[in-house]
Length: 310
Image 1 (cartoon, rainbow, N blue to C red):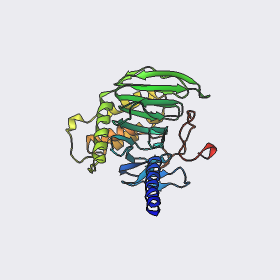
Image 2 (image 1 turned 90 degrees about the vertical axis):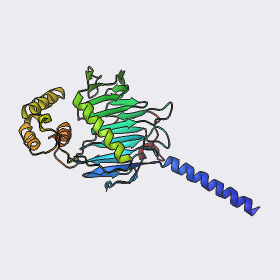
Image 3 (image 1 turned 120 degrees about the vertical axis):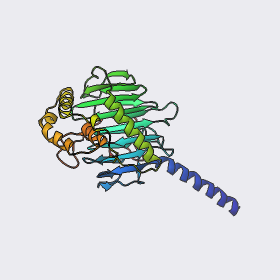
Image 4 (image 1 turned 180 degrees about the vertical axis):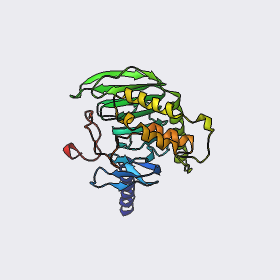
């Protein structure tokens, strides 16, 4: 009788361990560059993020200037994200045991999803929009008053909401296109993703894959590319002005000369492109405090806590 009770107790313990592991599923940090911090849902202080660290549902991750982090969201490392510089994001979930939603309050995230379970989707929530996929690659960039969504591979579905969380629009963004979404507004017109955007996303996903495989790579490679390929000063200025006009902001143009001087001091084309793509002189501190409220779907999974404690 005692042997039978011991056996049943052992089985129960294994079941409880399996359930606990499913509920407390952790993502894995596969690469860190610069200053990156995290704060768990149960804590009130920030901790330094390091390669190999486990992150769970509800954890907040933020990156400082010239910093980034690559994270594998599943045990097979088929679902991966890159969190770019000056970004803040919450790893979240719509069901126990999986991280299938990001709450992005500012900055840029690249996501490559190759292992989404049948019938499920992966969503990136901004303060007034949702961009989701069922297995593809996308990029979402959030400013204070504007979101940018790029469908890098396959179609991305988009939903937008007003200040009262009432849905304004639901549409499909075709592969190879992007759209700008003003805060609490419907998406703007579609425009094709530029070759520069495609090249950058290809480099990002290639490096994230290498990092998830355990291969160390430099984000700014030493190998030089032909100088003829380097963008000229006027080309850089014109493109910054165009981007600034699209985003209806003047801060970037105001600091163009400083940016060009920084470009001139660089040695490799990748270094120029990475800085060019992510440069934003509105950044004042290592970590910004802007955290707009998120649209919260009803009955969302909040982990083990309930109500206001979540």
